[in-house]
Image (cartoon, rainbow, N blue to C red; front, side):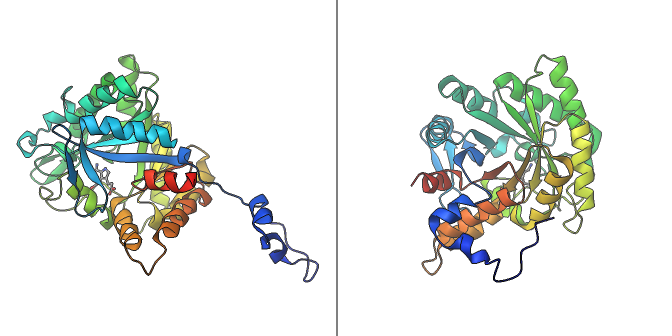
Length: 332
Ligand code: PBG
């Protein structure tokens, strides 16, 4: 419990807010570029940039430009990037075999980055949606998402990403049992040092819309993801998912989306005291990007305040499309 204050006027809390120097002394949380993981969208081609219309200033980049983005991240002090592929429609099938193609976009990008910027941490996404003719994170049969069959596919996908050189695997699919299966497979194949950052508390959220455009999965998606992602009305359930994934071998955990779920971030960090990340997702980005474009608002200050809120809630880091902008603002 916080120390109770002496009665006024012995206590005047404004004494500690009077000057910038005194305020700096009593600042509880700090934001730095080391707190950020920058999500990047990879597309085919050479020297190719494709604007994501629903996400101002965000572009899909061909692999040569992804390497440049990784260099930029490193120069800004951002320790990690996270790759998402924009897969050619012709490669999307109901079996999703492109997901574990050793030469798919993600795996080629990992190799290209590692060859030039070996020290940046590369995180990946493990889920079938960018490769799925159905747009779902799992295999679909007669409208039903198949759990165990999906896990077998996810393990193949994980191993190819590890072989390509990924440092951190991010299962975002919400199937049951996948963390344990991926961890066992990594151990068996000699990848005992590969980290798992599990999207453990991932909600069935309306805030993912722009992302689905960015990876080209919105057109394909039939129905919703409510049979595998968590009901936004639930909090305890998220804690159970965190406990489950840690017990199966996750090194780090994530809450997603971010700002509407700060209560979950706080509970996770307080309860488990493990490395806890939040994903400030595409819909949150879009709202704040609109604020940035609105001259009536101080958008930059709003972005920075939104990021600090994650630190105050206990997060160790934030996946955010604002990573380079925020790092530049912090460097000023
Ligand atoms: C899917 C995945 C999603 C995001 C990351 N991985 C979308 C979804 O579950 O539909 C969303 C990220 C964002 O909105 O920024 N595996």
